[in-house]
Image (cartoon, rainbow, N blue to C red):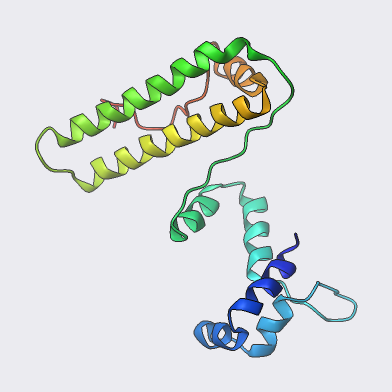
Length: 175
């Protein structure tokens, strides 16, 4: 689905006039967002969804998407690229999830040891939680597709571990 199509559907349920008022934009601009872009005819306008996509494409930084998802009450998990069956990494992948969960519990236990959680500790807990969700989602998607090749490829890239964790994520004792 194209961005203008999504906006057209949304504007059937949410008043474009209200959107224009709340954003401080003209009603005609809001309606142009819901039109397919046609540069030669002058219809359509680069809408906010297309701008976000362009920003993501030029920065290659998924924190933009994560931020939007958090504002919407959710979280972003990248879909793994799956090829077909290669289950040889099932046990290491399962162990990686268990390790991620243990790491999360260790960060929580360390933070809660003094019966208070600082904002840095809360940040570290959130980072470990996001990593656990990502690792688990990758595993579940591989299970659903019947392919563990993405996990094997990550292991090759990381030099021998399952590679499902990101090295920049805080670990207990390293935060």
